[in-house]
Length: 243
Ligand code: SF4
Image 1 (cartoon, rainbow, N blue to C red):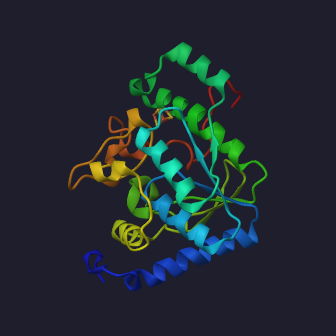
Image 2 (cartoon, protein in one colour):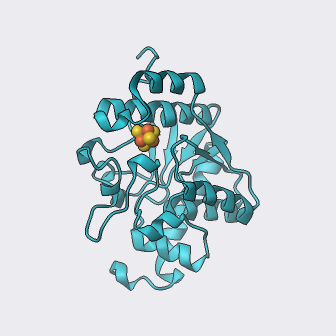
């Protein structure tokens, strides 16, 4: 079946069942399970499944301080729509103040190392706190999203954080994600209607044009093989901390 054949939920019955099996495995074999959402389309599919299955998986997000207003609106809307609290983690204030004082608020445009330093403080360190005491975590990553995710497994060991990581949508196509959203009336980020394929920080994410790679809108000034924020790679050094 080709992607454009997808018109009805029955067309993605098996991907849905597979994702639900992975969510169930995460929740039952590695409790407490935590779901990390950046409020992109894939994350909304998973949040909908998690609420529907009622497996006790805790949803959280990281507010880096540089998110789009559309993403804040969706966080509020998702809370109202699903009647669930979604934990919001923020960067360490002292570390962030120090980094900005030293480098400037937009230094991430000046090189990969500075960009990764900003991501380490605004994303990676809050993620570590969010995962403390958890048995596993769940993400909305898909193989189709990036050159860095072509070999993504449904389940992997996250060495940086020392726990199991599940990617229940690893094999899903973009079309399957949007079919699920439309058919289940899942709330989604308004940025997608403006051409944003992936949701991240406002200064580091842009809309893409037809034919561009899905991750082309993230850190577009860098090479494709550096385009990860540190959440899904081996532990980067957090500035100001011993390696
Ligand atoms: S995506 Fe950009 S603004 Fe956000 S944490 Fe990374 S470098 Fe900083």
